[in-house]
Image (cartoon, rainbow, N blue to C red; front, side, top):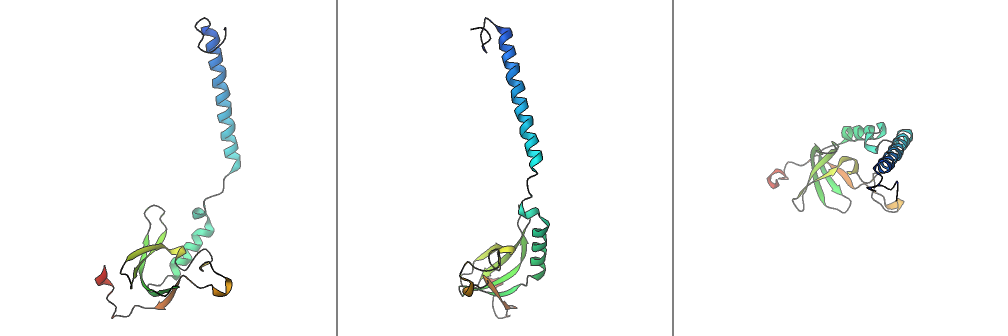
Length: 144
């Protein structure tokens, strides 16, 4: 069968076919690149100026101290730390009931996106409610 790719009787036809396939592939790649460049995909949320401003506002308003979780347990928010991959601020906190040390994204510290737990509007409350400065008689650091 003359002209088929790999036909030993027609090496010139095989080379022509191979060259034609390469040109088609290169054209498809160029077309895909042009579509991607034209699409101008939106930035991930973490890179938008609005999100950066939300993070800056949250950092400025964060207060270390005693917090009450919406389910009733008490927690001590010690400080802000930085996530090593996303570089976003996290709250380092200790449970006074269980003694466990945890971190939570600062943006999610008060609650979800709107700052509240998913619940009916009349029952909405912050995930963590600030109670005040840590009383000196609570031995938090002994638990670390």
